[in-house]
Image (cartoon, rainbow, N blue to C red):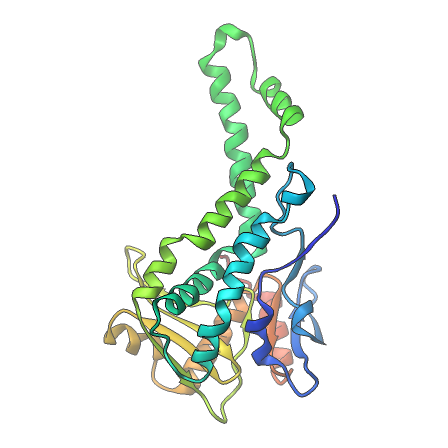
Length: 283
């Protein structure tokens, strides 16, 4: 099967971190625990082969998830992102829906999550074989026979259906609607330590019942999008000073990064490399 590059971090989102050389600093640990540091263009960051490709379908249908869902999200991102960068809060329902959908998609389009969804489907697919054998003892079948049968006639089914689930999650998730209902704001930090981002860039606070209370997302080296449910939630998110908030946010996105951290420059090179290597948090 031919390979296709898919970006789980849109280039339009990453563009804010470009310097005068039209590149950004990419920290990556894709290959083991050794962190590499390079100046790269946005188009070569957050890129995976066949991340959203549908298996087991005709060639002309294999990129449907990318074309119909991921590109739809990324195309709808440009206008609300432009408004937010000018510290103007979108009021148009379409803009708010598109931005909320993009923010929510960041939970699901991470390669680790895509792989985990496939693992869940494979596990469910195989466990059903044992249940079928136990319920139909008179057929004389065992679990291995059933598994081998399905692996021969439809080996791509778990991967296919996991990608279909991903498409539904990014386009029609409850998370997007919850984000859209929150109060939005943009914070600007002039002369402060630059904000970083990563392939897991959301810092969210939830209540004990998992209700979303607030979230933060860097939209540039000196701009942060925040959303919150109440004034108390806003205060809890922001902490006591800009320095404290930036430190907490950068530490959060670096330690949760699965593959890449993106920065305007490499001023925090040693700290980022150390955090990525030793403090990787589970999703």
